[in-house]
Image (cartoon, rainbow, N blue to C red; front, side, top):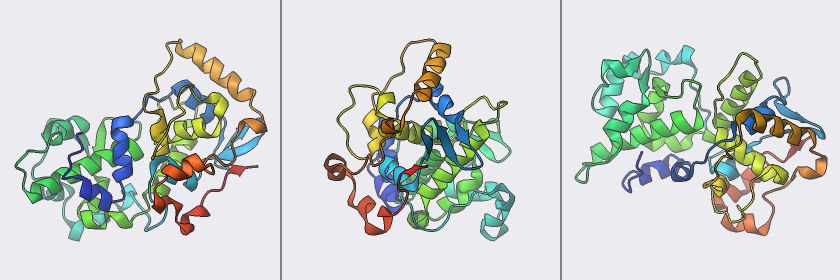
Length: 297
């Protein structure tokens, strides 16, 4: 969805602007490589079991890679409490109509979800003469898509869940939530589910996982990506998959992980002057520096 200038202030207030900037720089994920890592994920410890020890993604990685806040009020999207989050017991679809100005076609609705295509068709381009209230509606739609498709994507990859309505109702309050911790928790949950051999499709913020791999394991990263800015995940904006057959890439990825040694893991990828020069000052705040020192045992 197009990021219009009039929507940007709402994204900045929500502390989601840096993530929104990645929309135009989102890169392909290397599924064989990610699956090779998921095969090494240990749900009981929330770590990757590597030949040299255990390692994992931390809140520090989330802040540096995606620029998300890693402190604030918790984000809860529990379905069992969904109805309790509705304003004064208001039916979800009544609230949806108030927040977005209309209801989607019934063909675009399935239980408590709406097809991505409806949002794309309805809110893709903000009218030039849009009123302030219309801008707020488009900002809600953009944020809803951002949360559903980038941070909290699930295997049902073409639908938006209404669990986010309570947050969108007050755009001015979105910035008080800990989006970074919520995204990391969702990634952990998706990794745990991915260890089930019956699970086929990958889910979660996979670009975060892949960027973490490239930053932490130089021998696994593609060549020619020496220039970077903030966010650090945008470094791989032009990354494309090789044309090798999928089975061949899966075998190659597993072998590459089998051969890793402790010197192949970068303990502090964010300590260089080059990284410090591009990181947003808010990420470098003292209260954030203690989060997520490299996890390796």
